[in-house]
Amino acid sequence: KKIPQSVGHTLWHRLETMDISEDHKWVLYKSATEENDTLIVQSATGGKRHPFPNAEKAGFFGSSYLVVKGKKGLEVLYLKTGRRKSFNGAADFVVAGELLGMIYKNGTSERLSVINRQLTEVASIDKVVALKEHVASNSMAVATIDGGNATIRILQSERGVARRYQASFTATNAMYLTWSNDGKNIAFAVNSAEGSKLYAYSLEDQKLWVLEEDLLDSM
Image 1 (tube, rainbow, N blue to C red):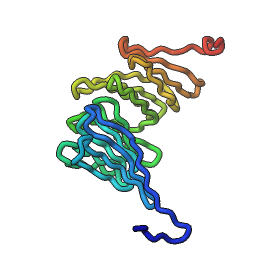
Image 2 (image 1 turned 90 degrees about the vertical axis):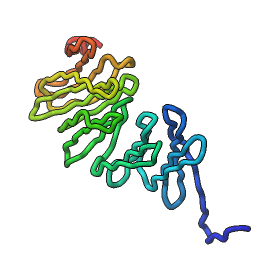
Image 3 (image 1 turned 120 degrees about the vertical axis):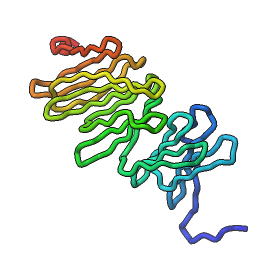
């Protein structure tokens, strides 16, 4: 039996796969229609299914959790039981292995709240200007500026315990954080009253290196 439709109006429905959990037990996909989009996480063997209408973004946090960005903030879904925990006011998130970073915006300023897989906060950092995750090494690099004093913090997690590395310098802006492939070094550009410089920080040596201007000119 045909469904009557108004002239010039066509109904459509599209499914898009987005991600799969670490243990391959859950699939995240989007169901899109003319009226709205719904993000859905479903057991790979069928059965359990959790829809999130009008969600803007979602991603797995390990094998146990799904993080969903909605209009009012973030929700963390415990996949095994379906229990949800809300983080109202959080504007975005990043996942770096065992660490989940939740970004809160207050005007032009940002605060980063970092939690582990027990959903316990392990760090809270204000005045964030740049953030870059490295999934394989469970690491996040966070740049902050406060009154012209800039700091790069690197957070790493081993079994849910956060370790911190830190380097400080004078700057008006920090940007373009870039990890090495192995997650042992990070490079970044800094602008200050003295000009622009490139830095590299070694996590193994805990040393900050400056790429000299005469070397830059020769490249």
